Length: 273
Image 1 (cartoon, helix red, strand yellow):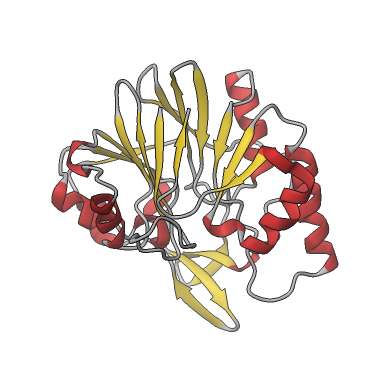
Image 2: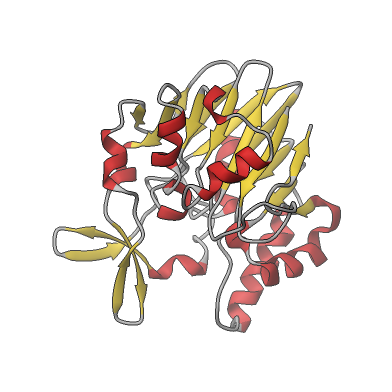
């Protein structure tokens, strides 16, 4: 199994564009997959730089309905109009972020839902014996504190996003089980616990942002949440690869707790299993 980061927030492989967003390319014996698409056509440019032919992708997955993961879908569709793009039905709702007193639209481009290759699913979904999708049905912990400003517009009201549009991809190949999430808005611990409940074991590896980044200083309570999350993850038989919305400050704190169990993935980095 080969997994390559196509774009994320930090500088990595020379010549690749880095930006606020996330995308991974995955190769297995049966499939060529793209998981999330980054914020723009820059993802396609990076794939070309990395000598990855996205026209050969046969399965695509959108983890949730935010622009920084979906902005590359339209550019992708121009070079590949046959790969099924799996997304949850509620992915096309109107998602916003609250900045002070201003609501900023952070949802997907509405033209995406009209693409013929989009395949809407509701809840868990099995693609084949190698690939499956699952959603969170039960949380054992609160969602990350950084989610408080994320809203969905219902009629004329902005209400708290419940992240029913978020899904994770599970890949079983080459004797390994790998879990890929986007931002883990539902909480990385909740996602791992849901995986354990549905699949009966822990994944060998989990690749995901943890949505813990913050532009302002962390409060003591927020820092404790980061440390407690790391302590919980350390109990699992899983190696964690993180990036994007985890943030470098939170990563450094978690790394102190988790050691070799936590690895940062930069733009263009490759993970081999």
